[in-house]
Amino acid sequence: MTSVDRWQLPDGIEEVLPAQAATAERLRRRLLDLYHSWGYQLVIPPLMEFTESLLIGLGRDLDMLTFKLTDQLSGRTMGVRADITPQVARIDAHSLAQPGVTRLCYAGSTLHTRPKSLLASRSPIQLGAELYGDNSLAADVEIVRLMLATLEVAGINASSPGVAITLDLGHVGVYQAVLASAGLNAEQEQTVFDALQRKSVPDLHIALAGVDPGAAELIIALVDLHGDDSVLANARELFADRAPGAVAAVDALQEVATVILRQRPGLDIYFDLAELRGYHYHTGIVFAAYVPGHGEALANGGRYDNVGAVFGRARPATGFATDLKALLALVPMDEEPRGAISMPDSDDPALAAAVNALREAGEVVINCLSTDPDPRCDRQLLEQDGEWRVQAIEY
Image: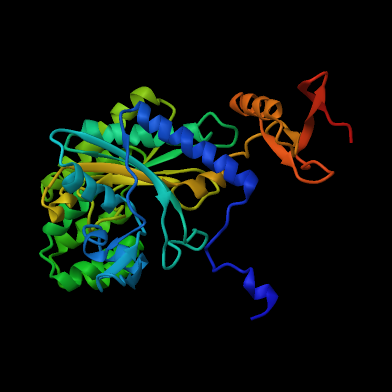
């Protein structure tokens, strides 16, 4: 191994250097304070857990993303978390087990075996909020609003120059109702699912060969059901007689959009009735926030009722998550903080008292271990007439 190899990091694994780290920490703190102000309580799940609990409930994709190793104490398989959501579901269902509505939030590092997309990090810093114990659309609306407020606190909002947030809304109930009318077997369902994710009409025609033409027509029609709210009217007309369950899901989307727009009349809402993100664990509304020039969603979430059942307590649940690193890539760096104060390396009690007072007032005071002060220092502590006073440094 050469000296060059020793400092290289794995692909998709990044270090965060001082200036950006300071911005990241201030943003993390502001976001957790935001969640606290909405009534969400902070939890700190462990970095690793046994895979029996860590990988349950969110589908095969999470299993593939998770690094696994053997616990030297128990011999059981453990995983480094790739997503904090199932951990918080476990905390709600088992560790807390509180009656009524529970609101929880979190912030922590995760690790992925491979990037979720071409430019994604393999070590995201995941922040999010989860609401348990309420299956109403009002709970979904609250979570969507909190997700949008998260972007605003990060400095990303519709009023920012060159920024236009798009809220993407979907509902897995549309696909479920339409699929139910086709009577497909498990293999056909998977083939149709894959083709629909790619919005490939030719592949859908092949996958649906031999299926009732009316049912096939409904499934293929999902490909084009995306855009503004006119999509909802088209869907109601299409599904009214043949997939009434899909109409109920469309009505739920309309209600959520209407309520959100009352507070955010300028928000761009995009409906996608073939949105299948998290289909294998989501049970209702799904949503994501996008901005121009950033191909991946900045934040996303949805309803995932009964995930806690595997921990002995089925609960309605809805929530969202974002990656702090992705937010940092789009927000301006914080302004450079004011300079620091250099102090001489001395055990003088009066100097120690002066330094403590300055640090408590928010100043940065750096011990000078050589003849030259730290380059961040623009002031210094000097003793004058028996008192320690701050003076400017003239370079």
